Image 1: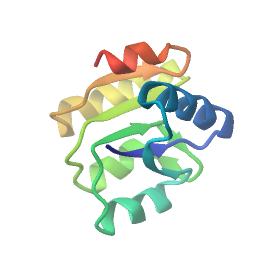
Image 2: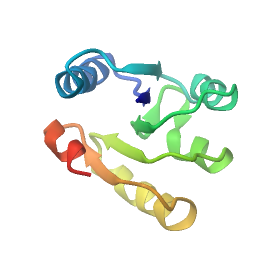
Image 3: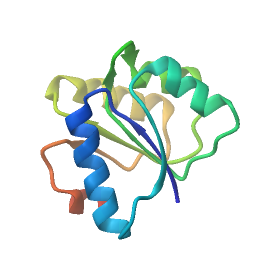
Amino acid sequence: MKILLLEDEIPAYEKLLEYLERHFGEPPHFDWSRTVAEAKTLLTEGSSYDIIFSDIELLDGTSIDLFKEISINCPIIFCTAFNSYLLDALRYIMCFKENLLEEIFHALYFEVILSC
């Protein structure tokens, strides 16, 4: 399974990676980006992903704006600590995304992710 992690905060990234390693029993194959610009490069240079775990606010913009700009053909799990982004995520889901799994918050346990 190839995973794309979009997370600007290093502690949140480390926690998500810890959950993924616990689930897979070893580090999964993944790419990581802290910025929209780098994520766009990863997504447009031929890399294909099975799933994307994405914070909404990255260092240089929002992942939702990125996903509106380029076609995504895999499920996305939004991971955010801010309830204020819930409406943005829901608007994106309703207008642009057919295979979104679930809007989640960093504070939830990884089992929620696995049950999606």
